[in-house]
Amino acid sequence: METYIEKNNQAQYVLSTRVRFARNIADYPFASRMDQTSAREIIEKVQGVLPDFDYIDFQSLDPVQARSYVEKHFVSPNFLTVRVPHGLLTKDDLYIMLCEEDHMRVQCIVPGLDFDQAFKRASAVCDTLEDKLNIAYHEKFGYLTHCPTNLGTGMRASVMMFLPALTFSGAIRKISQQLSKMGLTMRGIYGEGSEESGCLYQVSNQITLGISEEDTLSKLKEIVDTIIENEKRAQKALDAQNHDKLHDITSRALGTMKYAMTMSSEEFMSLYGKVRFGLNIGCLQDVCYETLDKLSVAVQPATISLDSAVQDAALRDKVRAEKVRNALCGDCSLGHSDT
Image (cartoon, rainbow, N blue to C red; front, top):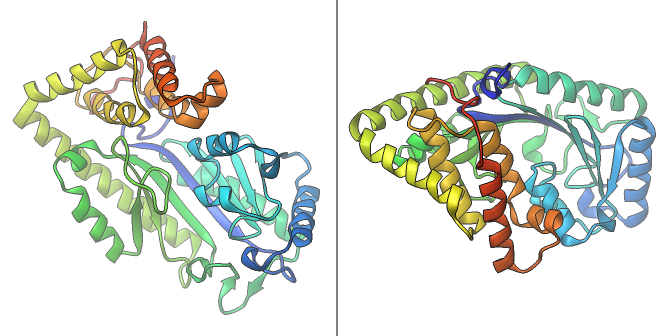
């Protein structure tokens, strides 16, 4: 049977890959100047081009429902603040935000490290849109976008990386600074403006003007491979120096996950980082990467509230602990792979 690690390339270090394109329809103002009528017209036009996509009207969602889509990484936190009609088109691994900062944010999110698949899927949708709609484009500046930093290709490619050893050793700050000098950026778990949680970081390109999509992806692949190698070396070094201590820390974290009766989302993410690290260095065997990664979304506050009809924070912490206990009960080592 194919395991989670075999199925998702570099899943020990990369949870997912995203490729996103910003596109706008000519003759309509950007989102910051858009009125209700223009927003509705844009939504109708895009729906007409992509009739096989499901549409979620965000104006009809309550705040908890909307927030759950952020927790699943399908929309940005900023999407929740949009005042004009806006919504999400979805189909398989494709998610299109309508009337966020740009008229369209076409995204493909795939598991593990796979820029080629994410790019292929997202760019195919963009080609379909360009065949049917008058997309705003300038010969010198490329695709016209609300924010000048997206001019050119309008493409942002990113990976969600798990970097515990670089985090615990303190080397992550230096790496983040180095990435900035190379036209890349390292952000928190929910992108711009968010903080690191569970040793998870979003690494993406910053430059979209004057560089081709292919060159952007090639550069990002090279950098991600380098970060992974740095993480592997850091893990081996930490394990060699503190094996017994790490074994104790990661085992205690797993024990807390299995037996705690109440657990905040912040505590869960801290434990998640330690337990996943224990899997990477071979200290833990009786838990799966797949289980942990599914839990990292399923136990977030809004998602818990929706799934369990629980709003009270204290009760939600009890439900979270119960979900974690149940998920880990009888878990297996199918996700384990030597590093």
